[in-house]
Length: 320
Length: 133
Image (cartoon, chains in turn brown, green):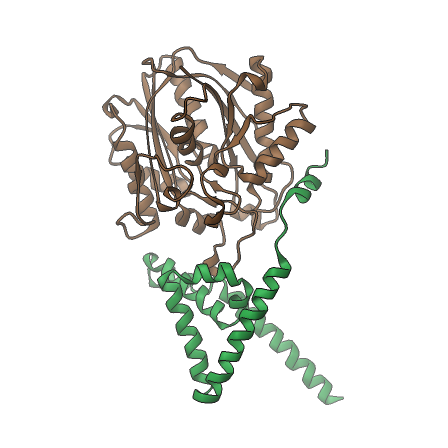
């Protein structure tokens, strides 16, 4: 796996918008919360687009953005492309399930580090209704949810990274490889993604010559409670890395237990939502490793009884 | 390390017994209520009552919570059938009458009807064959 170091890339601004479900959860300080799933629109897809527009428009200094990089979960990134046609800016779409945010950050950081561009906007979103319809078989059709499933969060986040110095520095990144441990249960996304997360964490530590204790927190994307437990087991048994108290999962830290969200939240905007509104708001975390995990779930391939591959990318951040 | 074994060990188990008891009570109560409806108003009224009630609750967004709690107790009876069809109709309304509602109306209910018909056919066949003997 390849690890890239950066000297001149910083996170300058960020914005997040989420729904009432997230507001009732453990993290309450996003910039904006909408009252229902529809945000004044007729369909969930249009609502997701409007959330993306709100997130991108609220970035300070947005006129200086050279390129917007990002993605959501809809086919052909249809929702995000519809949003971006209203912004006259270069756009790169990333389709990497819940690793989208980290992958977009890596692409943007590399372009800034090579001095090809000065700044990049990173945009992600997910919506419970639009993704349930595309990927899952919801309750509405009379199929019951497993007690170990994760639930898509309704949120959109945007960020501005550039070469202008700020107190949040992007230090390095590791581009992960596709991993498949032969899990076929679509409800168990945590078990699908945990091996990919373990592999990228191991390789990032190895390539940058660091120990797990060099970090204040390793924040994984949307493994959920079960996936986090499995990640800890794999790190110990397969890679010999002791990881007590260092691992935290973004998906598992959003909702309360009584919210019927089972193992926690999932979706591309889970990791930025928790990173912006919990990790960066607390002074406890200075050296942070973000690990975005994506289960590359294709309903057609799964219905044809294939296992689900997964990928994880890591990005290291230092806060002064 | 056998990953699939570890996954199996750590994955929480469904509370089958609890779910079965809930479904038994919910189904039983519905059955008893249906008996009263049939004896007072007739069988058609009973069907219409449950279908209208389930569809109404689905439209109001309450049915989901009830299904989550009572599980199969309300899915197996006609309420589950009505719930799945109303939900599909509502969800695909924006995609048009033919390609939207028409094509997706029976998304789940379709398999119930198909396999219902096939099993009915086999049972009738068996009964006729037995009668011949």
